[in-house]
Amino acid sequence: MRTVPVAIKDVLPAGLELIAGCPTCVALLTPGSSVTVAYTVRGARGFHHFSGVQAIVSDYLGLYRCQIEVAAPGKILIVPEVVRLTRLAAFTLGACASTPGRSRRARAGQESIP
Image (cartoon, rainbow, N blue to C red):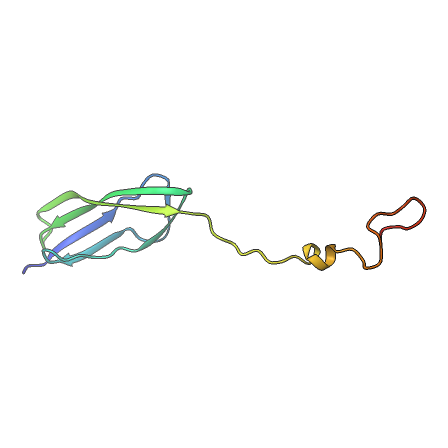
């Protein structure tokens, strides 16, 4: 089988921002082979739909070039980062409980609440 030089560019949906990596690749491919392109994006919460990739196929000398759009449907779901909350000392049960032996209500002139 013959290898063919192919330039591939993943088309990012509107609303996504590239923050790491590269959505393009140049490779020598044989018929039926595949290549993986990895990158990181940032965007608004929700689903973002990918439609396809652009591919430029050429001969070894670059005399003949053909640009095509290859259907590669897909989607990505962006959700907010989950942050684990830590317990705050001011809101622990021990800090909010009343002192034993004391009334929670102060009667006029008898007892004050600490």
